[in-house]
Amino acid sequence: KITAYGVEVAGSFGPAFFQSEYVQSTFEQPFFSDQDVNTWYVQGSWLLNGGHKAYKPATGVFGSPKVGDKGLWELTARYDTIENKDIVNREATSWLFGVNYYVNPNLRFMFNYTQGDNETNGDETGQYALRTQFAFAVAAVEVGCAPPGQPFPGAYRSPSPCERMRPSAFVPR
Image (spheres, rainbow, N blue to C red):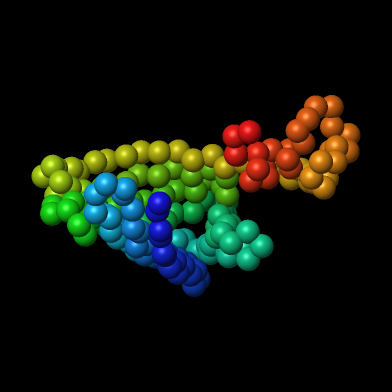
């Protein structure tokens, strides 16, 4: 059994964006003592030539910034850590610094440097990464659900999509 509690905070103010999260988890084990693991991160960014990441309350996410004719540059930074409180030397941390270039709201190029420190194996890694992200929208499809035991309207096969998502569908019969 895994029990986890977490809190997250994020905000966007003009060209500045920040986000942070903390999670405390307990991994219960049948024959050994429980393991408590804590992890957290804090990250931020600054859009250099204007722009703003607007919050979308309906989906709970921040959208891509609006991009002008000449693109949009963003500086980013992040620190994260994870630690097992019950085993000595079970901690890893990393710093990330980067720059992103938005060609448009759907296409961006990212260049990052990450410095990591893993106490478990003594590894201190430095890594450069160049990535490309392409985002696209998928048309929303509305699926209706029939009551349990009722056929799904218009379905050619059984079970219906809704019956496959019911908890009873995950229990062996």
